[in-house]
Image (tube, rainbow, N blue to C red; front, side, top):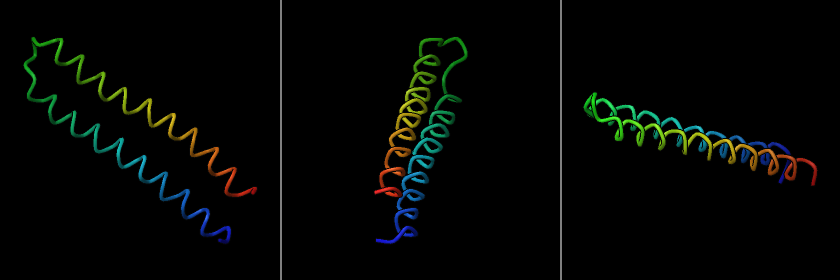
Length: 74
């Protein structure tokens, strides 16, 4: 597999991570609009779900960096 193919794999993985984060964030945003203003626990739970996805995507990005280095240099 050439360098172009390896970089295409990295790009596809990056886009997949990005799509997951955006979809979950927008889904939680639309669900959050239905939460009553005085329901603080539900609002905090919604925020926690979004933050969990964002921080897991950060870890995924770190793993993607390692994958990129491995694909390019080995």
